[in-house]
Length: 322
Image 1 (cartoon, rainbow, N blue to C red):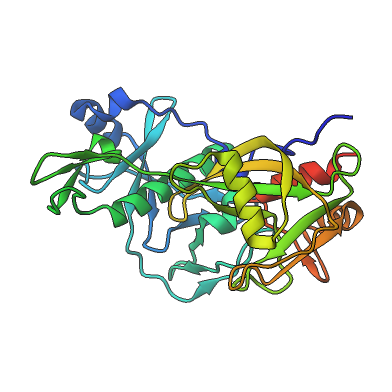
Image 2 (image 1 turned 135 degrees about the horizontal axis):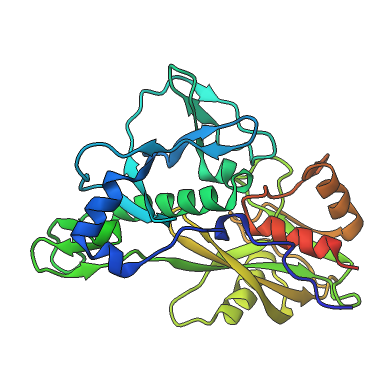
C-alpha cells in the first residue's frame, strides 16, 4: 500500500497560457498582442463575466483601442495575447452561485443578464485555460490594488512589464508581485499507511457545518515543515510527525500560495482549540468522508471544502486510499 496523494491537480494550479518575461519587456510586442488580444474584465470584488450553461466559461472580449496603462498581460495562447483590465460594470442584484461551487460568494448580474462570479465560486468549474487566466488576473489585480506606492520613498508607482512590475516615480525602485506562503495539512491518525480518521476543523466565520483541514501562514525564518508542526499545535493542540509534501496551488485572496502536506497525529491527544480561530475540531472516519464526497461534498453535519480549494483534492486523495 502506498501513501495517499492528491486526487488530481488543484483547481487553481491549472494553466495553459505561456508566460514569457522577455515578451513583457518589449513595448512593440505588447502593443501587437493587445491589438489582436482577448480581454478578461475583473471588477473590484474580483468577479468576472461567466457563462453558466451548459458549462462554466469565462466571457472574454476582443481588445479595443490603445493598450490601457492598467491592462495586465496574463499570457499567450497560440500567439494570442490574453489580458485583464479593471471593470466598472453596472451590476444589478445578485446571481445565484453555480451548482457545485462553494456557494458562499454570490455573484452579480448586468441588466442584459450576464453573470459575474468570484474565482472561489467558479474556479473548480472552469477548464484548465480559464482557471489559469482567472487566477492570474485576480492575483495581479490584488497586488496592484495594494502596491500603489513605493515601499522605499512613498512616491506613486507606475506599471511596467505588461503589469508584472512597477517602477517608482520618485526613486526608480522596481517591485514585483509578492506571494505569501501558507501551509495546509491533512492530519490522519496513522492507522496502517494512510490512517482511518482525519482531523477536521472549522473556523467561526465559516458557514455552519463547514469543515476542512488545517492551515496557516509561514513565519519569517521558518521552514515549511516547522510551520506545519507549529500551526497544528497552535490551532488544535496536537503534535504531528511524518510531515510530507503533497502539492501546491495559488490562492490569490489576496496573495497566498497554499502548500499542501500530510502528517500523522495520535488521536488520543486532547484537542485544545485556538480561541477565536477554531470553533470546532473532530476526528472523522474515512467512511463518513467518502459518503460526504459521494453526496457532492455535503452531508448533515459535515460540509467539505469546495472543488476550488486544494483541501478538496487532499481529502479526495485520502478518502480514496485503502
